[in-house]
Image 1 (cartoon, rainbow, N blue to C red):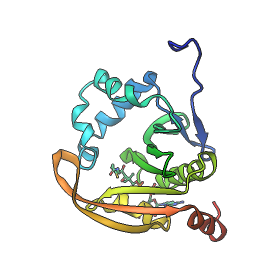
Image 2: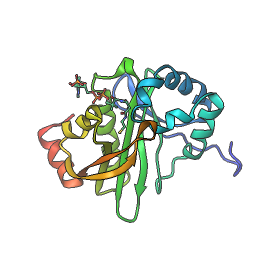
Image 3: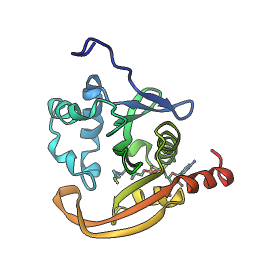
Length: 196
Ligand SMILES: CC(C)(COP(=O)(O)OP(=O)(O)OC[C@H]1O[C@@H](n2cnc3c(N)ncnc32)[C@H](O)[C@@H]1OP(=O)(O)O)[C@@H](O)C(=O)NCCC(=O)NCCS
């Protein structure tokens, strides 16, 4: 029960028989910290926040502003495999005025390279275009991050621009940032030729 006297509904969405998106909860902090700490060196190359997480308390503190699902602002989810956290995927930005959302993601090394992030992005697209009524989704990526760029490219997004010297990436390095976009009619057209 929260301070307003009700138990908030936890958002979850299954992707297939094993994979699911599950809204952040502070009770997951220990499991999430263990995963991030184990993969720290790899994740910190592109995720600058990893360097500020040194213990479970840091993990809990970093999650605190993100735990509430606000359809007018953000949705932060774990990616789970048989209920175990293997990464995160969500909507760090939901812009209700301009009707767009931004998708973000990471996955642990043991589950990388199996199409699970692509599957999670497809589910987040469905949430954006159907549940939230948005008209555009975007994915922004460090231009050097070829594995991450491959995700929107595989899904037919348009590379709309490269913002030069625009993103603080891992280890505080300032890099060029690619902006990929997908509009609702493009998503609908893709579903006709590429149904999941
Ligand atoms: C970026 C990142 C999330 C990409 O993860 P990923 O596992 O490569 O992405 P996907 O789940 O889409 O998997 C794609 C791979 O699975 C393979 N695959 C297998 N089945 C597949 C399927 N059904 N659909 C799509 N791809 C499939 C693809 O061929 C591809 O393999 P390849 O890399 O050998 O070419 C991951 O590398 C990561 O977490 N990196 C560190 C953090 C980071 O950079 N986050 C992004 C910040 S913007």
